[in-house]
Image (cartoon, rainbow, N blue to C red; front, side, top):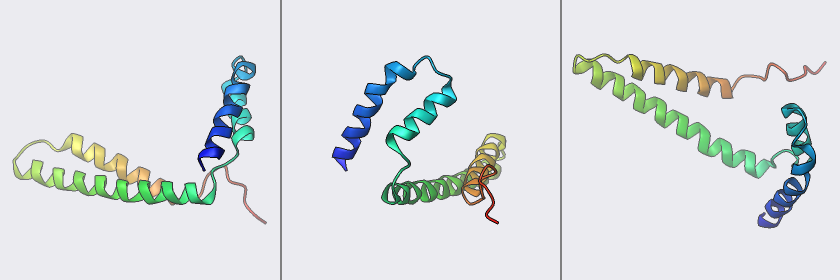
Length: 103
């Protein structure tokens, strides 16, 4: 895996001077072609970290809301954090709006 990372880093380092003047979308496309999409192991690792992390943070904001309300304080900021975390977590499980439909 380290060898693949080194190869990816070398490829990006070599192409950086030639794509720096391009449009940002073209730069992203060039880098994606050079390194390719993440493999299944990397994707699984990201999901294993991201989903439980969002669940824990969402739970902590619920606890913060309850504590703030019990203390008679405003829970506006905690509610804002909760809604953002909940939206982020739900967004992980929805279909991409740019994904092509299979017929």
